[in-house]
Amino acid sequence: MIGGEFRAEKRIRRLFLWVSCLFFVPALGAGGQSELATFRGKVVDAEGNPVADATILLVDATRGGAIKTETNDKGNFYRRGLRPSKYALTIEKDGYVAHEEVLDFRSGEEKRQEFRLMPTLSVPEAAFQKGLEAFNAGDFEAAAQAFDEVTRLSPETPEGHSNLALAYIQLGQMPDAVQELEKAAELSGNFRTWAQLAMAYVQVDRLQAAVRSFETALEKEHDTADPIAYECWMALGSLYFGENRVTDAVAAYENALSASSSSVEALVALGKCQFNLGDMSKSQEYFQRTIDTAPSSPQAEEAMTFIEEIEKTKDRKP
Image (cartoon, rainbow, N blue to C red; front, side, top):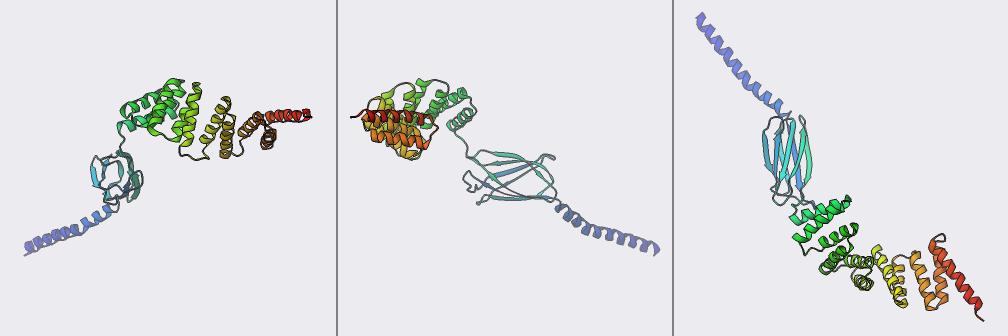
């Protein structure tokens, strides 16, 4: 009996230990879960629209394990049970540039983050981007090479030709710049491209072509307050005046003055035009406005000289 009681007591002890373990193991699991991190996020495109079915891959940089999930139709994703560690995150979706970064998850952390995916660039688009970066960095040779590649890969893209022209201008290759701007103007037909072409014609002394291009540019839809519009009117007025088309020059300078009401360059130019036309009263009025607008400017000094000449002319009259 004593032996039986002893064996029974041992069985009871083993049973007690086994039952205790049943309660003890979940307790360990609950404590471990509280130390794990969670990850909530949203994936959107360049315009902020949700990107569905994007693949989210997290690779544990310490242990090497990988965790994978996907975004839902609202671009959202959620993952729990992440052990504290650094993770290499990769977000992929066809048609978009993959997003990669390293995230550090701390114990018990709930990380929330939004990710923006950019569309995959085509070969011409990538070359164009490369050209812009080179141009902005002042590497005009590299910019010209990149934009030249754009024009070869996508010859119907006017921006490729116009930006190649700008790179050529910086390199002093004006004939090449004019050629590219002519192509761009044919393709786009917008105000700015024609204005750039007209200004390039002036630089290579093709003045008749410049006049026609300025006139074409200013016939295109544009903002009358655009500084480029002002420059076009001023340049066209100067070209008209050089051709002795003084009345046309007056109209051009008046448009320039409408674009920039305080322009002393336009005011003094109008004064000269009226002087040339023999209307001394209007001429003096414009010159006086020049002086009143910017008394210390070179234009004011020039206007004063003309006013003195006008006064002498009045004194000489019988």
